[in-house]
Image (cartoon, rainbow over the protein chains, first blue to last red):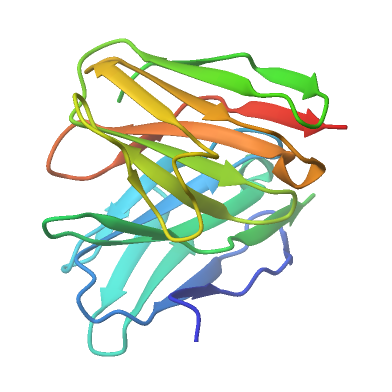
Length: 111
Length: 114
């Protein structure tokens, strides 16, 4: 089983739709979680951290479910500019930090 | 966040040669990392660049192939040695500034080995 798994998509959704991505992780010692956005031929950029209580930033909501070992990202009222690949990142932090990126989920928002 | 620059932005190199990539940050950072992203793949961590000591390499990556320097808290280099076409990839540096462990990436270096 991969350490971090994501559905690579693509997810093709119309403008204004709500779309959700899930990401599962295998290491129960994982302690911090993030969603990154990567546009084509660009570097990944931090979208949001994922807190245990869940967090929201405008149209974006991130949730963490430790019992089932997954995190989710919900995008409401999709915009054309949301088209990108969304990367799930999981950290195990101790004396040595281990960072694992998922393969990413590609989103295409269609006019 | 952090402002990170990388040089070169891209290069085409012949097999058997070496390329050194530079990563410069606009302020001191705690941790710096080097990643590789091959076409259609996600990011793979190569190593953690430690200031004043040897880098910590991930499984599958060795110092002889990817020597790393980090002379201070704002600068690091990654060398890709004795290159082969399989080394064609995007190489990215990233930094972590605080305990939140949020990473910020440089723009990447697109390497093609012929």
